[in-house]
Length: 182
Image (cartoon, rainbow, N blue to C red; front, side, top):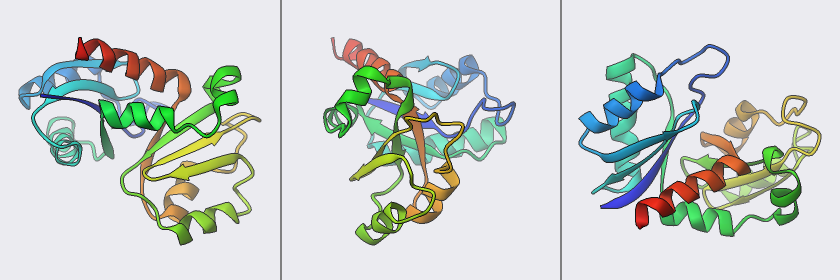
């Protein structure tokens, strides 16, 4: 069975899309996924499954709609994909010096070159960012809350939806996935 990581978008943020992590873990168990473990309250689940990440994302999204009556985006990566995404980080200095302000956005699909160019030339894109395949790395040096490069702008311009995690969370998820591999 593969080790997979599910990222739920915008759960338990500002009192919206509230899901208790214990209930989410129970849902994963009911789906037949094994060893489900959550990290933080923001919808990160590490689990084992005999399926592809894309198939798991669809199944989890449908189960969340049925179980919690919520429509949230779900992006799933394999542990190997997560490790490769971390290794490809184009901002290594930020990952060491400012990890809470370095975000990796896990995109549902890879955006086109034209979409990436459009985002680069957007008046909202003042932060340093780089899109590599299905990941977008953004260093919010001035802080995330003050940035005009919002998830809505990224979604609309890139033509795909995603969900972001800061570097601290990414590295914690990798550590947990590595524990699963033992």
